Length: 139
Image 1 (tube, rainbow, N blue to C red):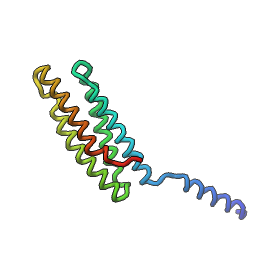
Image 2 (image 1 turned 90 degrees about the vertical axis):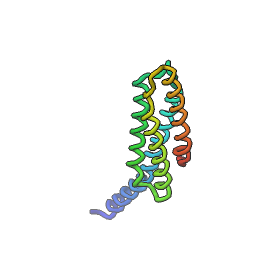
Image 3 (image 1 turned 135 degrees about the vertical axis):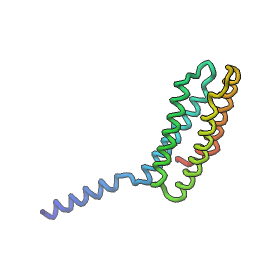
Image 4 (image 1 turned 180 degrees about the vertical axis):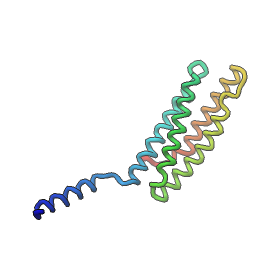
């Protein structure tokens, strides 16, 4: 191989390597993307009323949140120690609240009870998001 070809090959490899994202950067993006989607799903759910909420609509948002929590869990291992601890804490807190709230939905017998339960549960979900994931820095 000619010296010029070797130099060009080395420069190309170095340039490609410099442009790539680290595992930590990818994990941060995954966490922040999932965090953003959780926030959007919470807002969607909070915007529902007894007359606008459908079983499928609520179920779809709850499933999306569950999927986002799994994405966050999957990405944690590639974060630096400080961010990993922050994200794990937020994920554990929110997951615990989420499971408790989701488990309570749909247990009322009357329409009035269901409306009150939905309003309370969605308020609690928003508060749980603010307490946990809103604190995670994604800037």
